[in-house]
Length: 252
Length: 319
Image (cartoon, rainbow over all chains, first blue to last red; front, side):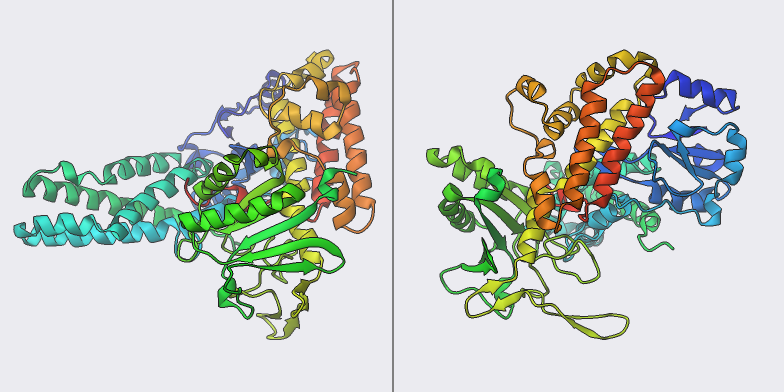
């Protein structure tokens, strides 16, 4: 039985209880998204001095990937709601029966709202921001710059100097900088999702997009570098746009 | 009575005021009073720049000797462009003035933007009862998106005398200065996280186990319970914002009309004090019950406080 977060301390007595019930607790791995029957979420999770609840994102992801799975929340909250809450102080005699009474994700299970900070809302701040200053905006501007420069360089080797000047314009530089800074600020929150492999892929692409064309001394190397950056930023855009579907705040 | 209540409260809000019905006079600021209380809202509408930061630092410096000052900088990239480093720059400028250095604990600077947070007014969101309406205006008329019905909100008591109702002053102060719910919630979850690794068989060491936590939890427990012997033993470092419970109890009485919440606060404090810091537990069962009672007393309290956990604590603008 996978548990998230994977560094959550499992007391020997709790481990023994799960094992006696026929379930072995293990840290969550991405492969569990397809095969796990039960997933235990011990949330909210601390990020810096903050606590954030990512349960809604996990529910949306599992609804698509593994609707038969049961997502359990665990803790010591007396006013916990719903049949999917495992109270450490009141462990059931028969965990199998408890699971039968719990709702599967495919039955539209949604985490109860305890008025805590939700990761879906944090994603909105990251992705949309306020007055078009979210990551999506800077990503789109940076991508457009790279696409224009790449297309022109591809068609015309004489564009080298113009291409350098074009990418060095303050608004273009600002888009690249803000994209990177915004990613750095929000990355710790995004690691609370089931998408840690994808987040690491984004890290790699973003490292590759760091403006580094001043080192490219000739047309060939500049053209190759810009094209490489374009491929990275387009891959980044595709992946994050795809992930944004799991951060809806208006799921019934 | 704590100094939180005794000193005057000044709210400085840098926002789109000049786009609204009451633009700011040419001198760059104006002051709005609160009906029945001595608090003051100071309005400024200046884009982030070295000059603007200098202007704001001078303004804060003028109020700081006699007041608590709560500043809100509009962190909107397309209009005011304040960011985390603006906050640091203001603190640095003020810290350069020797006579103000000791007073900086009276100052709090927040970034805001995007709506939906307590500094805004939104009739549909209970924790949004602040100063800001739409387009640079104080809140006035709202239209229900479903019925189309108009609803009037009167914040301005007297436009000629620059006077507002007192509610937004109390509301915004509670959320951004005292922030009681956020602090109780933080204590509760830090407790849960640390105690998740506690073996109840070590019930005799319960308090010592809590004391061993190297982060925020132990100072939070001590400042929340106010046990004098423990307070004396805390290292002399500035209190973390989430560990500073000064004024929380009074704020609950002042802001939420009556003593029910303040009573609940005192009861939770007694529970935590007794079970976490004083009582010697005699069995693992007792320790398990104590853990549950501590957590749930804090949970009931934080859940009863009609404040939102603010997303503004998240760095939505890069450093």
